[in-house]
Amino acid sequence: MTITPDALADAATLTISPVASRIGAEITGIDIARLLSAATVDALWQALCRHKVLFFRGANLDDTAHDAFA
Image (cartoon, rainbow, N blue to C red; front, top):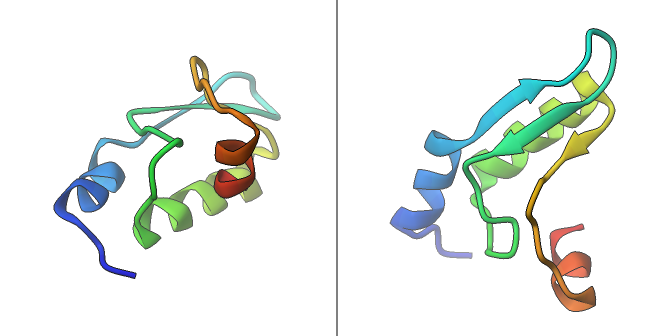
C-alpha cells in the first residue's frame, strides 16, 4: 500500500476528544470514507482501547464504505 501525502496528513489532523469521564471519545479531523494511513489506524486503535467507544459524527458511509472502514 502506498501512503499518500493526504494520508499522512490524516494523522496530523486527527483530534480525539473524550466525551465522558469513563467511556467514549469523539473523533474529528479525518474522513473515514477514505483510505487511512497506518499512523491514523494505529491512533484510532489506541483511542478505541482507551475510550472503548468512538464517535464519528457526520460520517456518511454506505454499506461498502462501512465494511472497508471496519
